[in-house]
Amino acid sequence: MRQLLCGALVLLLTSCADRNELSESHARATAETLIATNGPRIRDFHQVNWKGLKQVSATEAQGVAVMVYRFQMPDGSTSEEQVPGKFIYHKTRDGWVLDHADFPNPKNLHHQLEQDVFVKVTSAEVDTRAAEGQIPGTSVVSQPGDDRDRPLAAAETSADTDATTSAAAAPPSPAAARQAVEGYLTTTTAADGAWSAKEFRPIRRVNGNELELPATLVIQSPDGPRAYRGGFYFSYEPSAGQWLLTRMSFSAAGLEPIEESLATPVPVG
Image (cartoon, rainbow, N blue to C red; front, side, top):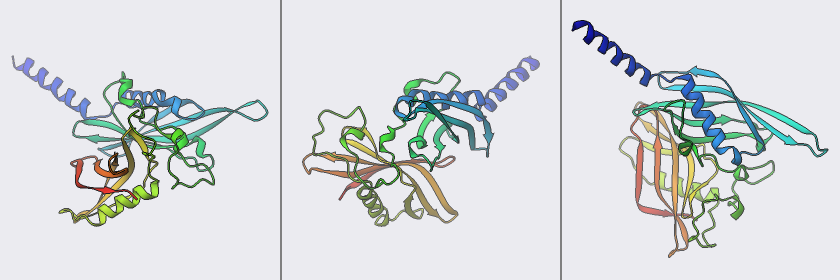
């Protein structure tokens, strides 16, 4: 009987340890599913070459990989570009999450991928629905000489645009959206310290009447700054004919997530 109990305890501890550790096969499957599912949105995407998993800390790991792009040259020949980068994973209360793809390429903005995402790491069989639509079309990424503060054109919005949204609901410029966010943060006093935002990324359409402005939220706590990843959300109000900052959603490994709906939405512009 004692041997049976000891055996059961060993199995239980092993199971708990497995849940606390990030398996490379699971991490790789999550990353490859994310990219494969969103591949049509990534210009000239050919394949992703996995290189290995690196454990940075108890709550962070990085999957080293190379994004491969293939494209046609003006003379009709085919060329290839390989961009090294990493997938970043963080451990949360509910397990490991792939929350960022980081493949910078300042020499060719057509072939770069720097995107906050959210795909739970569950197994080597990742549900493609969990990864679908997490990477916006590359048309929203600024090209050399473009103005990052220009508003999104109609052709740059997501394909799932709600048909009830009128033409007047053109997305606000990134500058106007950031101004609304910064205005709200500077006039809001939080018990745990001052709030600010940085590392804003291109606006993406969640649906026909809601936009997300991905960013990093920084809270200056007594123990030092704490950084959260997530986004600020804007809803379109047809009666007022304008976009409003209505809520924010952020998370960080080992910390309570921040989910806040604004009591008084902030007009954009």
